[in-house]
Figure (spheres, rainbow over the protein chains, first blue to last red):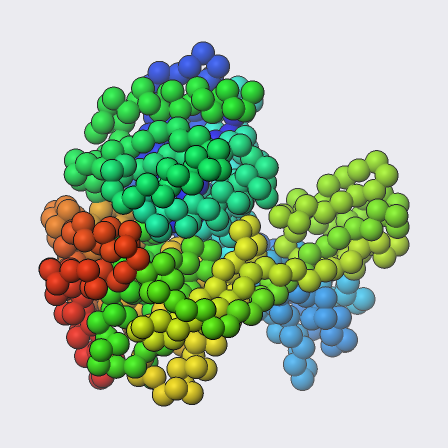
Length: 287
Length: 293
């Protein structure tokens, strides 16, 4: 079972919920849960490790294959630049320029070069590290500073982390663009964490469209900081027939222990029951 | 004309609250053009009463489509696709439009020319009038690519408008993270205002966004939102900024007026004269001072 925890709006509590759910399942595993794994897919702002303090193995370097042009063989025909959809190649007077940070690593230029003058060389864009938190498996990725493309790091972080008898929790990045999509793709269920404010609602709508309408994945909502704002999210969920699976109250002690990197299952132990019930409802929805 | 970009690394630290508050305060004494560069979670419009004046479709990129009548199911497209976007079939192959990154590798490799690269509308961008300046904003359709390109489109149009109207400042509400849309948003920026919160996550992500703006040689100043929620973590951020030689120009206290303003659809400075507004005033004066040098 793969559960992706997403949100649309940033800072609504994705990491709080993902970490809380993983720990609740780990401490009191339901009969069908043989293992628990958490992958932090927010490779631009990865914070799950601050709460879980995993023992990590060596960093894997994530590389994209980018073109390298052999000037001896290149005839400056321009075919490579012509096929590149990302403007990552340009033919100037006497050579081909490669803009590595625009390259998506699709390999098209290499395939079309009539002289076989292009080879692909690795270009570092970030890292992935894997480890453990007790018996929980953990992975997270880091996009290198100044590099634009996050999706290959998300893909690599997820790779090999799922086993059929376990639960894999994915902590997704905010937004509704490609990094968020990459973190929801392949999930059996998407938990949308929101807060009951107009901002939370606006961005929940976009995330819901991606998860339910584009990807066709069943969804449920978690309302965080319950009690602030208005009833817009509530009414929206009712209209859209999206179940509200958990409410996390707005309390100062939660904000304070969040600030110190304390998982919510420690601050509010009674939430463990709520998180396990949430898992039960997710399992029913997926079955 | 000076460009101010509000960023945070971590989402939900209060970028939009700060942007709307500064827009409301600064527009009293200066002429502004506003832009929302968070194109997949564009919230600035929710508190600025925009009156829509112009909508323009945004063509993102192209996506591959396989003609099932021409396809011989040879599998070459699946072989060359590096984005796991080609779905195999017995009679014909198909492309998953959500996974397709529009690279056209399959288009060039298909031996029977069964693949077309079709332009997709990936979103829209808008020009609106608000009481505090013209607002350029956009909506990336959910799940679409090219958020960086849409950010660039929004900012270029805002910039042209600002130059034409001889605006004093262009104030840009940025996206979270440090990747493609953030990098697109930093172009042309004179000052990046980094909004953080007093938590371990806030500090961790501040460090990454500070590295990012430094990489692109943009000057930065820091604002700590909900300053008093965790004084010990706020002190850590203070020390971090001192170590890095970055000015910390604002300490916004926690106040439920911020949520009230969001609910009533107003800049926070329009609903309270309390400490949040006073601090946003101080922040605006500090920004204007930095940019006057």
